[in-house]
Image (tube, rainbow, N blue to C red; front, side, top):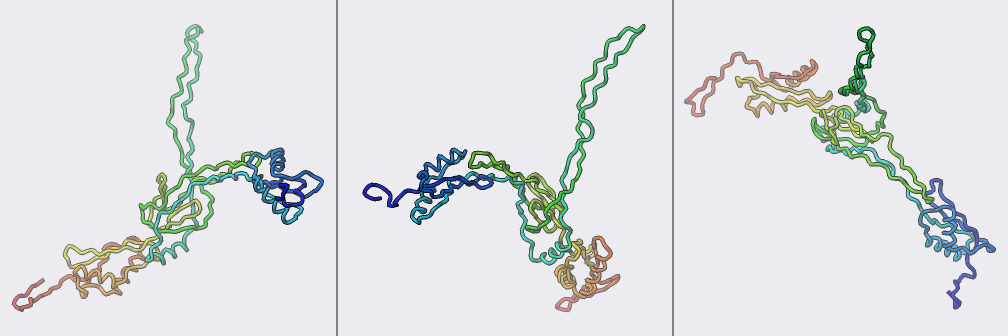
Length: 352
């Protein structure tokens, strides 16, 4: 400021003011071009012009002042300033699937990789309930009957419509989805694999001119559950053991589990049987040495048991025949056998 209270610039900024906005009318700019024979440009003048053109939102007068000062200092012939912003709409959000399963365990990683590589693309269906027949029984017509000698008889009033139990038919409609895989996990039958976060409605926006902008709503609001899983309210539960797959708005379970085996001792305490629950094709079978070690821990002597190679061949042959492997004998045949055990002091002998 000088002694007269004027700005240090020789003259104020004079020119024309135009108000421009983006195509969505969410941002407005003041475009000022120098013209010495025109009006003096002030933030209040910019606000007046913006209001005259219908702008409803707040005007940033400080932004106009700062841009004008910078233009004067740099001796530019024009300047621009963002003077107002609208509120963009918030789009609606569909149901979200929040995965709750742990990652695939290390001992299952190889089998899971094989299963996922061979798995079909996800197929999801939406249940559509459709009414069958009409809801109400039709009223009986009112027939005017004639009595003896053609005289009119009293009319029969129609019976009121009797409520009929609604019947519905469930139809499964396939849904086109994006098959891109976003996350995986592993779950056993009956475990909760995901939670469903409820949808949220969109919030309208507002332009700088005060007009409402309707938000975009998702075409597909419902989270979709595919094979191997079922929805129970806000939870999704695995109906099989396997690998959980989650996409943008879908989740399913691909069956996958290792073979499970156990040993059983016969009542005569002389025989041992192996039972195996079949797992996914490609699962790893127990080795013969694993089976023998487990049998020894149950009290069987190694020389009473089949060798490791024979046990493995028996298992492979049983699996090829299909079905479950139940009570597969792993002890040698001993229709008649005598064993004499002598005590340590060599004074007593036991016959079995």
